[in-house]
Amino acid sequence: MMNVFSSVDLSKSLELSMKLVDLNVAKLTTIVKAQTAATSGFVELTTTRAKAATEVKDYDGLMGFAQEQTEMMQSNVEKLITDCKSSVEDTMAYGKEVQEILSQSMK
Image 1 (cartoon, rainbow, N blue to C red):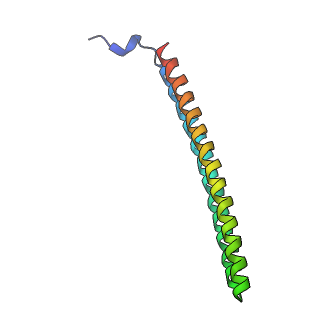
Image 2 (image 1 turned 180 degrees about the horizontal axis):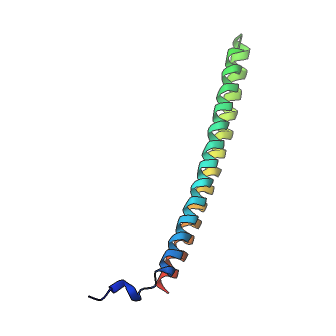
Image 3 (image 1 turned 60 degrees about the vertical axis):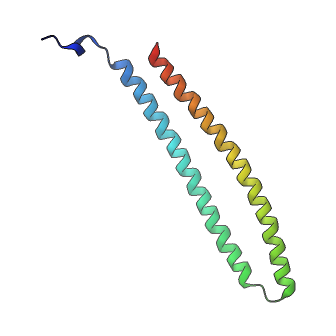
């Protein structure tokens, strides 16, 4: 019986598979680092704001704290929008890279 795979060169397929693996590892590493930084920043912000809340002693202090919170919320929403736009751009770039690698397998 003839071995069907004896004439098939799998080196190109393996090379493309490794390119996909490398791309995925790099992308996941970037995502994990970004999430770790975001989580650390959130923990720090929460701790700082909780401490500031405990320092409120009167009505004026409460109003000042509320104003700071409002400003901070606006800033955080703006950062979230910027981060989301960046994430969409990164995802689209990733998709293009995957398509390029897969199109190489068609050649």
